[in-house]
Image 1: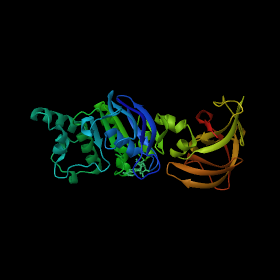
Image 2: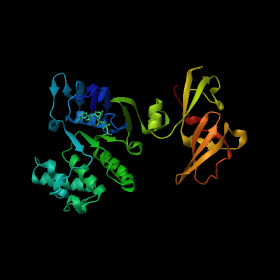
Image 3: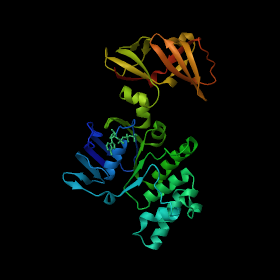
Image 4: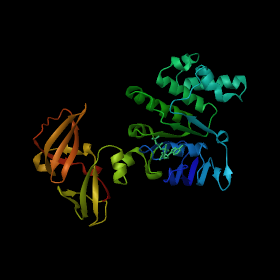
Length: 344
Ligand SMILES: Nc1ncnc2c1ncn2[C@@H]1O[C@H](COP(=O)(O)OP(=O)(O)OP(=O)(O)O)[C@@H](O)[C@H]1O
């Protein structure tokens, strides 16, 4: 549905590339999240796809048609793209129905009414069509923006930080809603977010950008459980990095031998990514190591425990009901199935 080939973009009076040698294929019906720290090029990439910015080099294909490259430039309004902006950009003087029907001016009255009813139903706003944007909650405004973008049946939907104006409770609900609406519409969609939870809970595939390039692309489980490098590992929450050498029986670490089939080459010096929830207290006989509890931070359903060990400080996330106090010696094991080796 969308293909980007070796895209480069540099802004005037900037030394560094905003987007650098970026190639990506997005399948029909896929819901993709673009994540990365501030300035990593997420918005620029969205704007290049939409046609609001011009790349220095590269090619862009939409629905197998070249829209940029080799002398071609297709205007944004001809690209069959729907956009949802961060602030929703609803027309304040138009009601919900008029906002949604805005892009349906080419349809006959009857077609327009039918499509409007379909969309109101899809986003659950059947009873709100007469209201104006200022009379709606943030979540309802977002539904209107989604419906308006979907109205002309675009090939692809681009959403810039769709959840950033919502509070935590509404965000949780709208992530599920947005995914349902997009999947029911059978549309390809890309959304930009700086919040890893938006991406992990909503997307089919996550693209991690850093300095304008893709650092990893994969399913939410892949980028979280099998990060390709320390940057990606750290981007999705705390990770313990344990130096190790792969051997025939497993990984040799400062904590002792971790028995397993190592995924790395023998004798290769690597780092093991261990998420805090994969360190588990256990009986002393089964323990890989014993850590001294330095600090305990209450997080609600979990507690973050700082453990001083032979390998330095390790962070464990334990059930909040587990009784742990500073100064205590805590025997622990590591869930071997969840260990990922990365280059050191
Ligand atoms: N209009 C512009 N003029 C000059 N430089 C720009 C412009 N827009 C973006 N940049 C630069 O391009 C790089 C990528 O910016 P971009 O806004 O795409 O990143 P982002 O990942 O979307 O960041 P954020 O999460 O803060 O919105 C940054 O170095 C930024 O300063």
